[in-house]
Amino acid sequence: MSHTPRSPRSRTVLGCALLLAPLIATGLTGCGGPSSDPLAAKPYDAADQVAFSGVSESRKTDPDKPLEVTAKGDDSRLTDVTATDSAGRYVRGELTPDGKRWRSTVPLAAGTHYTLRVSTEDSGGAPGRRTIGFDTSKAKSRLKVTFGPEAGTYGVGQPITAKLSAPVKDASARAVVERALKVDSQPAVDGVWHWVDDRNLHYRPRDYWPAHATIDVHANLKGIRVANGLYGADSKPLRLTTGDRVEAITDSGTHQMTVLRNGQAIRTIPITTGMPGFDTRNGIKVILAKESSVRMTGASIGLGNSYDLLVHWAARVTWSGEYVHAAPWSTGSQGAANVSHGCTGMSNDNARWFFDTVRLGDIVKVVNSRGAMMTAFDNGFGDWNVGWDKWRAGSAVATAPPDGSAPAESARLRPQV
Image 1 (tube, one colour):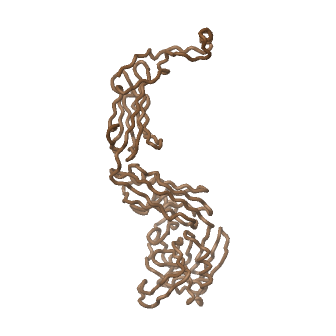
Image 2 (cartoon, one colour):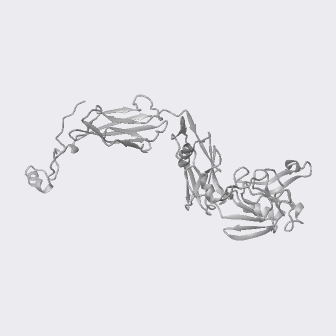
Image 3 (cartoon, one colour):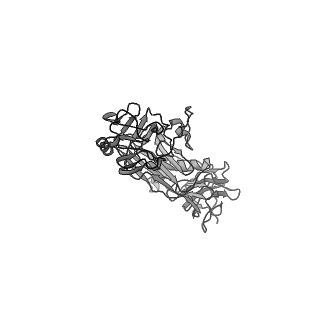
């Protein structure tokens, strides 16, 4: 390919006023017409002035390899290089000061079409252009994210969960994943992801979610390189809403439960909680499920055939079997003594009212029990028992000074009644 050499880069620019008379004389009506300015010329095809490395128009490009564009010869240089995917996202890169080489500084996405646009300049200042398109090869292994819970309306204590299809252990790979997981709420809150283990993350705000909030969760991970050979897959987004702020404060010392809606007490209920040796766990729990009837047996907690009951109006707060439920057999002790095997018992009428009032994600906070603290992740949603600084420390991207708090004490995992 050849092109006509242009004039030197030093040039004189004349003002419109000086050109006005000649233009009128020739029948022209503006400051247009031919120009000797090389920058005003139509760019020539710079195919013979640039070389590409790590990219090919005829075969799939390896997304793990960087892109390189080089200016060929001594009489040309690169003035601009842009690489964008089909969604218009730019690939970051660096151009050397002498304009001879550009190199991408971030990995490409797998299974994606890119457009690479190169601008050049010859020794005379004439502009050249070269545009190519290419496709990256598909990933051999894909990382899928499944968000939870299911779409719907929840209490203000409901954490967001993200389950990964493959373990992610490396800190830098975790940061890639976490930055791609987006949570937006109206009204806005300060929240962060916390790595529970190599496959699971939880997201929560500093405090509970606002009442009547809308929460949108999605992943920008598709095609993104997480680690060698592992790229993000497409993930289904999630939308949640919250209802009123409902909190049940369970005081094992006074044997009373106070239920609040949006900060106002709406009912006080006589209760019984765990007896010595079966003390109810202290701390903040979240309602996990509502079961109008559930069978509870002594054998499930190592007490043989001591009881076998069909229990009604049961709101589950731990996976190991702690509920808030109707306990008509203990009405004489409710409000006076703790006689259960760990659950919170109340009359049939109060249990039915509680069951109808609460929803999944509502808060049950137990205080003044002799039991251990509710654990954070292995027996339900004890996320709120983790201090905010410690919670942020579980993020791969957020930083916070330590607050000196100790981990929550591990609690027994056993079914209770």
